[in-house]
Length: 510
Ligand SMILES: Cc1cc2nc3c(=O)[nH]c(=O)nc-3n(C[C@H](O)[C@H](O)[C@H](O)COP(=O)(O)OP(=O)(O)OC[C@H]3O[C@@H](n4cnc5c(N)ncnc54)[C@H](O)[C@@H]3O)c2cc1C
Image (tube, rainbow, N blue to C red):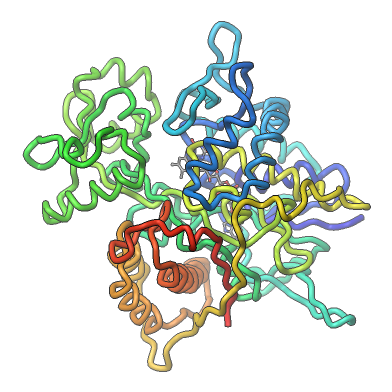
């Protein structure tokens, strides 16, 4: 029986493991416990076409618009078409989506033209999905290894001159071998000091792929959420709170978004996030505040039970006082370049979920499309293993945006490189390669990053630090190369979006 190694226990990894369990010998590695993932913390919901008034075409159109001219039409079409079946599968696997009068409750989110957001536990959709899938995984034949971090891919040369991924190494030097390796290691919010992502999001999959010589794409595109609580762990204060009427105020209590965009607090995410960062800089770093007090404590507790509990746990009585908020790194559009079946440039290596870049999100993710991506592509990568494999969904020529030829990234240490702390690296990335970038500042960041020495991997923390360093270098080099502004990549020295640059970036380590 073919053996499959899945790395990561978010929606993408657990979906792939469950799909594979019937036909293959499956091992699932995860570096913390099964529940630690971005998936577990997702709030708002999952975007799926489930009503008659809605349509796949409309979901596709909204996703393409959010992607700022860079979404791959083919990948988007697949997501939206296969979304309803993947959603039904989640229900079959025990996820309890919220209902009103015996019917699914549909929420509307910014940039969706229909109410197509299905949620669980009010604002605890990710937990609803994660714990249902965990129960299924534990009851399945999948062999689970928790607290087990993959450190590097094992790539073997083949007699025909080719090469293939055949497993991963662990911290203790053990090699876990498999016929197929599926990376589902999620994002890299820990590149930045402010992030909504949990501690496990350290870009490990992309780092492993870079070291193994795989092609990565669009690493320059990072989505920053405008409003996270300015307190340890940066708990996400959902856009829906502003949707209900909460307003952003400066140190003097004045609404500053009114001067910036006609939609004020409900302007696009990147606009609001940058405006907050500018305002914070004007206030010498003092966070701006989100005023929800006019909504009333009772309403807030009922409508946003999860956020209410998180605010209270940090000592904020948000029904009675404005709360400090800051933008925070939230979602990575870039990742290991993968095709419509999750296949990467290395035979035997697949990438699904946030770690992958199949072009679906383009330069900016449409809210609530990423949980769906994990469910859809987690299923597709297993379907691709069938013998014979399923036919290509569409002709490659139908892809909307081009994939550039990979360029070579120099990600090595300087000869005179010095130790660094994670805090140093995160501050550098925030200040020099965060919400607003310029060529000069990124060149400075590139030099500083080259002068950090890659730590020797002796434990989980040093492995993560080594990963964060190589990923930071790649993000900065790819952001330097894109001399325009688009979606999650904003350069004040190149503020325009240039039609000539409407192509995905691709790179490999030199
Ligand atoms: C606060 C928050 C709110 C969000 N809200 C929404 C929302 O409402 N709707 C939506 O669609 N999306 C939302 N997102 C985004 C969404 O949650 C993620 O994009 C999605 O869950 C990613 O799923 P994944 O399976 O690819 O990765 P993850 O869920 O992040 O899982 C990655 C897994 O890999 C493991 N791992 C990482 N490195 C290693 C390693 N070296 N070895 C072994 N295991 C490893 C991790 O421990 C983890 O288990 C939100 C994200 C956050 C942080």
